[in-house]
Image (tube, rainbow, N blue to C red; front, side, top):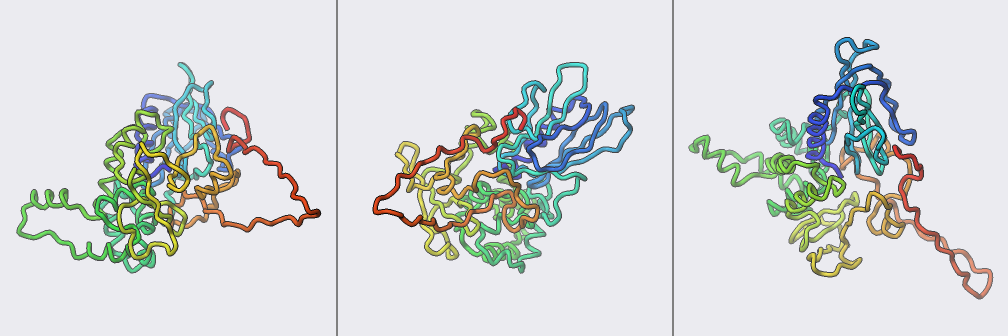
Length: 390
């Protein structure tokens, strides 16, 4: 799932790829997308991007003399589980390109596309950041730190630290893989009470006898949790590429995978938090670990893995997981419905809801023999519409 670093890398990509391009015409939306139409038309306009936490603002700015005369338009994107931007030839649109911006003639016609395989991503008109999100962990570190420490009385910090780290009111930009990496580096049990972990930071003050260079060195050598919430995402941005997700290209993904120390790594244990999200860790899970939850350890690459290992494997973009695999991973059923807009920021808002386990109804037998059940093949695609741009 794209997290803060992926949104920032996407903004860098858009700004670099579109720097010399002139776009023109209407903005085109896929008919299967339930996001709003974009009422924008201009004979010549530029595109720029800015990321903040887990959101990206795209600004369409008409060039001087463009027709019809109009004001710039901004859209704010949230990437959901599979959102990304791609620049492609207009006659070779990728599947699931749900919003398209076309370049103006002359020259080869290109399309900047918002691509979203699973359709959890959203865009909103107006350019306003989603209300309630805290300061960005990457770009607004001082405000982010102050916001957390000032609000430790909030009930969000009664919960385990692994769950509090997904609360976008305080940790805007932190997601599943980042929380695992941050807690692992500090050897903090994921199910330790969040307030217990963070209250100690209120009293942390560097010795006044230290010089500025000594204070900086001490901070770099012994960062606290909030400092790592800033520096660990920054490391991912510095890797370049597109960050998390095998669809970013094997070379990019290999570098990202080599950077990971904990998330889905061999030898690490995993548990599901109360929202159904898997947290990876090493050692004791902590006092607030879910009762009855069974910790599972991922085997090394050379060991044969079975269902009992509980390893989460991302589905192939071209093939949807079977119903059995969806049940094992806690994925939602195949559907074209969007995540409701009112999703709480108190958990990672792009995470799909965990389906409730229902009881299977047994059909009463009409005779002494059991009837043979026919098994239907799983639907091979998450999107039944077969258009190339859907």
